[in-house]
Image 1 (tube, rainbow, N blue to C red):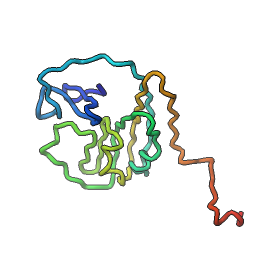
Image 2: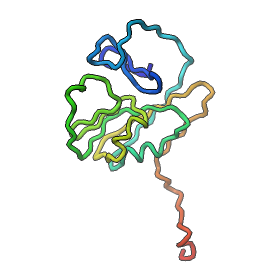
Image 3: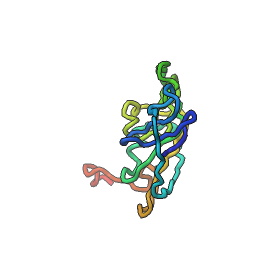
Image 4: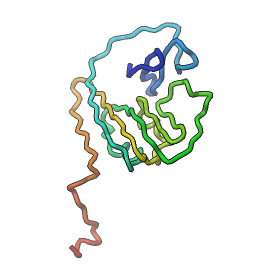
Length: 158
């Protein structure tokens, strides 16, 4: 279980983020029977990332892929995508309508169509979900600040 959506739950089902609930209009999965099985405890590490002037591709490229993570937040972009009103109430990890992109427990693979969008403003919360025994996560988005590499062609000039 990842979170809540429209009086239901958001779950990781077969590697995809889906919602489960009693409404077939608002949820991707409509169970006839359900059993909640207790799993091992997880530790959630959250980090806010200011996305002003940055693309979703930049964000995904800077995240550690050795840990499971989910993205939440709202980004304002320069775009005019029309919202598909047939699916507006159903859960989707990424929703783009007008000038706003909403992320709700999105994974990197959910962002394929949106990676080139650059935010005018907004922030994303990155949540890493760690199992007991997982190594610690250090989240740094400094773009390599402090580490200056000179291309080999220019080495003799400096």
